[in-house]
Image 1 (cartoon, helix red, strand yellow):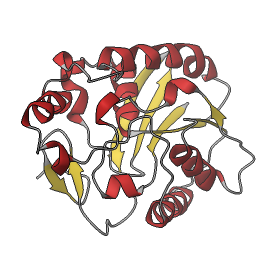
Image 2 (cartoon, helix red, strand yellow; image 1 turned 90 degrees about the vertical axis):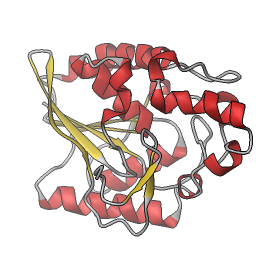
Image 3 (cartoon, one colour; image 1 turned 180 degrees about the vertical axis):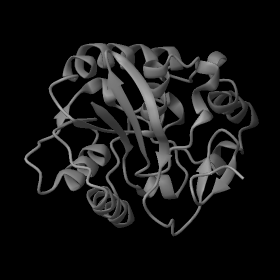
Length: 226
């Protein structure tokens, strides 16, 4: 069985480099376009889906709906697939945070030292995130082996990375090793209860503008660190 982990399309908050977390922000027109391009490209490679789990947040759920159009599959939502909560930092853009050096330094640890990151307010740690994702993988994904050929999980950037950490037993200190741009797809095979990575963070489009790589603070355009 193949499991395709897909980040949602672009939102206006993505474009403005705002922390989204569990805030329920919809796709923008460009985000819908990316989902349609990705759907078409995967279909051209012969990829279709037999089953889908999706985050209940609208940006991920709508991405799943676009990708699944024409297939007899309805996304099944699971609360554990929501994006990590950034607590008091949600809605803030990086330039805004830089005006408060102490707050920015605390938030930056999220990307530079995830093992020791302490969220502000009611945010989540990476242990919180990987804990709920481990439960999800064990309860929902592993039992699907042998039932389906291709399973889509439509979710969020940190959730995709967290799922890869759980599936491949990767430590939290290496959480940000993969780049997950909007509508990036990571594919893992599942055989006899073991996951193997086929590819990570693949994009099927030419980006119209640059994206922020949170782990380096640099802007990227093609999903690769240079």
